[in-house]
Image (cartoon, rainbow, N blue to C red; front, top):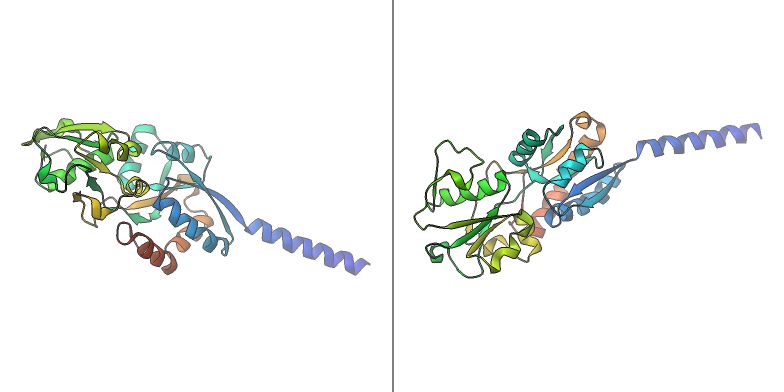
Length: 259
């Protein structure tokens, strides 16, 4: 009987150790590719003792607010320039833990097959946040459509436009609403995750970014958590060959792995 009690206690202790090693983390994402990739990552992470709960957000602000408040442990939806701008404006104590996906930005139209067909005075919808709206303006500058102030940096605004030969009118809307604006404008700049949700692919874009650039997306965590073991486990799984193969097959080049 005594031996049985010892064995029972030992088994219970081992079970307790195993339970302690398993860790649950909540990761905030926006719908579309970020969520789809993490759904693929989830069972792979479970084999490493990491239980991922995926929380979807419909905009680009709340995921960082929730992370900073400790309501979630990580998020996967943004590129580094956007995060840095959020930290500057809102004082968030969060930072990049590692790269994830690259989403080349596209400008889409229901009315025109090429940007050259956009008439003088045409309406162009862009995102109303500084990093993504600025990114859209930089894309149009790169294609010779507008010119910006030389010192505008990577977050230019409409006020930084110094040359606009076609007299385009820029309509600033929330990033999540840009696909819905297509009926009302000549063209709209749409982040790939929202374009995917709307049934668009990068092949539909009348302008698109080159695949490489400063806008690679990241997994963000709170600064106090950056060196915790679960962060390394999450990144190791995310950067695995299995996940890379999934991204390449699933998104056909519209979304690219950054590792």
